Length: 388
Picture 1 (tube, rainbow, N blue to C red):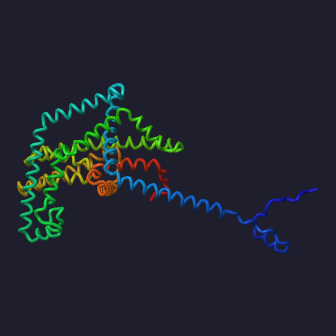
Picture 2 (tube, rainbow, N blue to C red; picture 1 turned 120 degrees about the horizontal axis):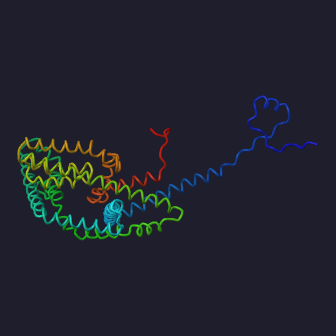
Picture 3 (tube, one colour; picture 1 turned 180 degrees about the vertical axis):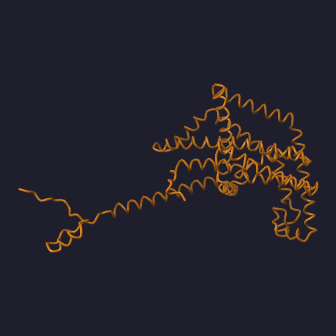
């Protein structure tokens, strides 16, 4: 006695079987899969995810807008702590010293280096910086007078805003003229540093405390993360700290080479205040791309007072230095440090500069490097078929 099969009919039967069934009793129709509820649940889940992501980005944007200055100080202290921690780890690795003694040695070495610099070259640097500030203002006035007596120069001044030394939106003698802004923002570094002494002290002290026990503060931050996400958050935190250390190490070497080459080259050309200009070029190179222009403008303004030949030589000198830095030095450094696309670097400087002001412009590159490392850890890599 055979039993009838209760399995559903095969909806993918061949055409011959279909023709044969048409002559017999009608076969039961195939059941329609009930996926409407599943699709609706997936659609609602996607909408919920987008809303949560949008709300999170809005909260982050509001915090940055309201607490921008505090967040900038916090990031500067973290960056300083990363430097202290990285140097201490080098001593731990090569000298087999305990971490506490290594950190003490690093702090003592930095204090001694700053003390020797201030004691030996401090008066000369302050004097040259003051002379450079006065020379830039005089050169700006001379350049403006020259442009006013030239039809093309007058047209340039008429189209430039007052913030850049032009005639639009203000008088020609405005304190916000180009020469005054350059002299105040670039060569007044020491004066602005003393004016912001309280902020610098907070950054140094907070960074030192962060470096003394980084695990304490990292674990405290991890406790704010849901338990299921803590392993991933820990991985991202370690990636970001390693990226910041690699960026600082590479950029410090880059600044040193650019500063030395600029100072020596200007001294050979005969430009006055070569030491101050070299130090300024090295410091400005902390800001990629834009810093190179900021460091070259004061040297070009001073070279104008010497003559066309010296001005061309200074322009060629900075062009050669930046060509060497961009095509020889930077690739070697990035091979062991961190690679950032130039377009993203410039756009990040524009974005963070608009949001946080000049401090945002200074810290845009390391902050972007850390964010890129976090983004790289959050997203899976592209396969060969997915690449453009």
